[in-house]
Image 1 (cartoon, one colour):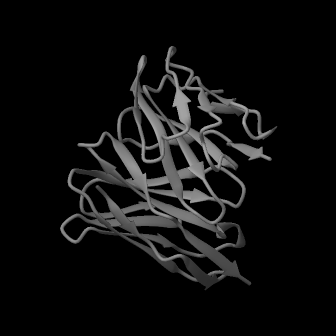
Image 2: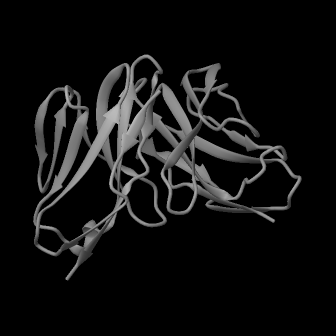
Amino acid sequence: DGGITQSPKYLFRKEGQNVTLSCEQNLNHDAMYWYRQDPGQGLRLIYYSQIVNDFQKGDIAEGYSVSREKKESFPLTVTSAQKNPTAFYLCASSPGTALEQYFGPGTRLTVT
Amino acid sequence: GQNIDQPTEMTATEGAIVQINCTYQTSGFNGLFWYQQHAGEAPTFLSYNVLDGLEEKGRFSSFLSRSKGYSYLLLKELQMKDSASYLCAVSDINAGKSTFGDGTTLTVKP
């Protein structure tokens, strides 16, 4: 089955620690995206990548970092510099730039 | 940049029809998407419009007017399971990405 996976589903961390969220897709999609969603709000773009070894900052990139070493994988690191990291993080992929996106199940990160 | 507006909340009755509007402003329009998101879950793709007119897909239809910067999602024969948030997203060819609206939370009542 083709799809996009994120792990873990729930993640708890102490303040001051970096944490990496996993995102893998076997849809052979070129483009991948990371979003953050806070309760009752829409999706805000953190980073996106249109091709391997290249990525661009989204609207709220501060405190986050990414890599795109393989087409299938786009991990997101939430650094200690991110002031309010507790949120629902969604990864998505699409067949090409600015086409429909397919989302993973999301990771709920809680930092205390 | 892009500016996308949708109503925050809507309520409708089971079996009825509801129309969710979306207005947008963008410099490099390359298509408009509608997604459905149930509470606590990830969004799922519903429809895509790039040309003016109506696209029908079962109980759901989506309309686009590029000259007016306007789209709507029409849901017919509403079911309880249609209670969800509906997200409008606009693709910008210049930016190489899509921007999402804040979503419309639809509550379907018996």
